[in-house]
Image (cartoon, rainbow, N blue to C red; front, side):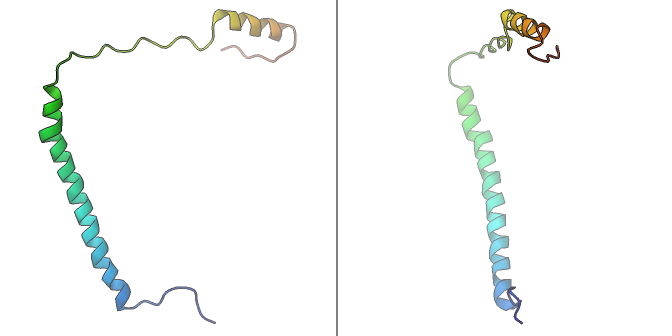
Length: 85
């Protein structure tokens, strides 16, 4: 009976060096991109006009007080089991 796995031979060893080179090149290019951002892009962006942005206003509460009144009336009437919180 033949197994479904590949036989280990010298040909599969060739791909090891290619993958090692491709991984090293990827890390090198990633680092080079980070340096380009740090040395070129961010300083240019800091030269653009405009001040610091104002923080956004806080979001509204998820439920209005009227919704809470409605839920408590339904819960008191036995229509819904409500846990406050």
